[in-house]
Image (cartoon, rainbow over all chains, first blue to last red; front, top):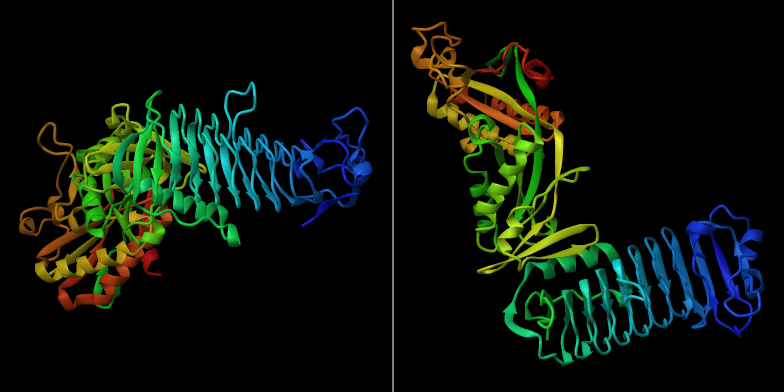
Length: 272
Length: 299
């Protein structure tokens, strides 16, 4: 598989934005053209060639060595191909992603997978707040695809999320699924305070929640078929991720319907 | 031409283009999945009288179904997509949705699709919710034993074939039934086909039209043994019974494979149980687009 390798030359002194620096947009460019692409966000001009040692040739794969939280927008605009980040990623990684795969070996900052519509994102570490959430001014957050986070996720994951699946192997922060309109969030380590404020539709699944909102109604213990479908879907979509492979969901859960402060068609399924 | 003592007529089965779809019906146990599938396929023998021709294609192991439970693949055939859709909705709505623990999924991957859930999901009266997982969308309808899950769409083919057939003719009614049952069992192992009549077998082969107004089909007296001496019969003096196997398939190849399997099994048993001759039904070759010559299927 052909591809490019960006190796960070030195510690970044200002934030950079790799939005649209993805295999599907780099394909067809010469190495020289790739190096001249501007990625700076500050007052000084910053080309890829100044910040990274660039090797290889544009293809289906992009490897970013020396990833740091100062690099925003990694994988944003990805439609096909693979991006591998060795290290951390900044904000808005996988923002608006439509296909392909993004692997991050470290942590990410906020708004991971915001507006994502398709593809797979695997983060080995933890993610900041607002995973899959809508950005300010946007109507919807994540609208498709699958995200796996090996560590924890920050507050308000899935805020205004519409479709897609987020799997957090660790714990989710406060207000997970706030204003969510669809999709599925699995928190293997449980939810923080008050999951699902103003949740309209969508499914939150985890062993526990620090505190339940009073507007979630206990509907009892059930074995809905949809849990089997989610298990099948994750297994077939993700394959073997080694330590990051999600655990199969238990088939019996306690269902809380909510948020009854809105239309109440969402649900919190407690597996513990 | 004779094979293992059985005469094979130099004729062909004439079959028609049909629209078809496939469903996967699951439940907590194989028993209840079969009950739901059988109920849905009831009164689904002939498209002329029943609106659709339906049957179980095969049993599915849990690892073959979307929800990992036991299931059955059911095929439905109709004259056209427009005539198939109401049959699909009514049968799923009345027979699968109502069956304990059932779920209903697409069983045919095809570019054209039918709105499987449009109808059954509205039973939820506003409490139904959808769940999209990848490219597939499911509806969850609250019911008294939990939730009925139904996939949003199912595949549609307009390349289906209805009316592939074999006529097994014999001198012993009970023995002929056993031979025909064995042929049906062999056909059941062929993927993408069904034999929609009771037990896969028709004992009332028909001809087009009738002396009575309003009857679109009537008994085929030329193949009725009790009229053998009274009409221009197709049957030889020793014939006691004729049984027909009607085959519908998602493709013409599947129907040909099924006829081939049925022929091989029947001729393999040979005359031991009274089978004397195998023929096939046609309308002179002018009505159906698909012709299956028996001699070609024996090659």
